[in-house]
Length: 526
Image (tube, rainbow, N blue to C red):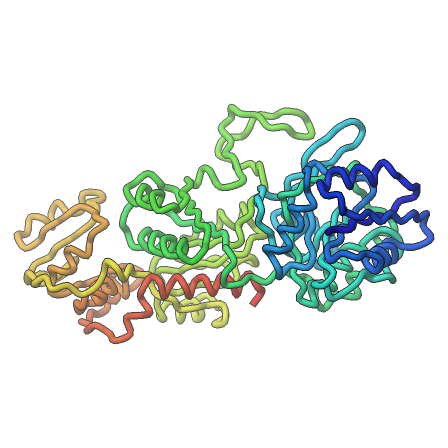
């Protein structure tokens, strides 16, 4: 059923019996190779592969023991349920850097391995448990490598001297040959060593870098059916303003497109927040960014100098986070995300060309800008010298199930702005409506998640530039006045636009699919 093989300096019958017993299967065959340096580890492993009579082979160190009983049947099931995988391991990374040090970017690491040394035992947890799932990676560590002999395309590279970098060369060759490599966590081992590098490792690493320099850095390819873990950061996420609804409608649809969505914002206690949580969107306050804890001058942290009180309003990194991509908006929030998560790929939505809050931020981790209308794209190119290929025009996402034509008769008013009747829907911030509401033709209603009820009753809408209200009106078959303004708020002109014929591009499912494809392009380095 399974062969397990290892290299050792001295024959160890006790280890053979331990491997057989923990496997839970009497037919597990153990191939022990006594080797005192006469051969490198790649040669030994190729011999084991050649001698084995089973499809599944476990190649491991001789200083491990299994924490999981009956691990053999578990491993067989993983290979059976995931026929695309040829190599499985206990720890690995989704990104192979140009340095050859696969562990240097810890947020990209996955797996769980126990260690034992000098009478102490601890767990190295590079990610949360995946239960019976497999995490797609570029390479796995050589402490435990399980292969399916009929699915790999490359053997171990016997030119790799000694006992270092053999695993990286083997995995990377197969990765380039499109063999799928994965990390599993439903089998646990303890490694009776902490692992160390030496001059031989350094030499082999330099050879590896030179040999594969045209392919480095490398990362796993994201596929359409693969879940993407997204952090969406914004200024506010509690009421029904334009950018808040942008994040809400986008997050809602991304959930249906196999995305794990977390929203991070400064204000997260309003009705929109509650609505999002009910749908399964995780919402966090900016004072609780994933992986960080905000200092308050009361709690202490351990440093090289001992325990020190935390500094108020300073973020302290507590753990690594595993977001695949960060989708951010609003300049101060984008800057904070760059400071907290400088190595995670980002995409930024720009909602306006006339508001300072929407000024674009330039950073190496920001791979794409989304302009919600063509004029913003032109502005980003002409004013901020951002490359055209770094910008995509993707419109505001509008919920097509809510905003659609209705048979309800209109009531002879313009929604938001008009010369017949003026109806305003939204918060009365700073009491700005006090004078306006003295006019008999002006009516005001509080913020509502059901603004479509007003749109169905109106004759036309009006708004500043191409905003959500105009598009929502179009979706309900209502024409819309668009007011063009400058950065000082001065009205340059206004024009009544009929309902366009290409409404599909505004639907939230269309927009969310487009944005997900942009995520995938970024994650695949395109």
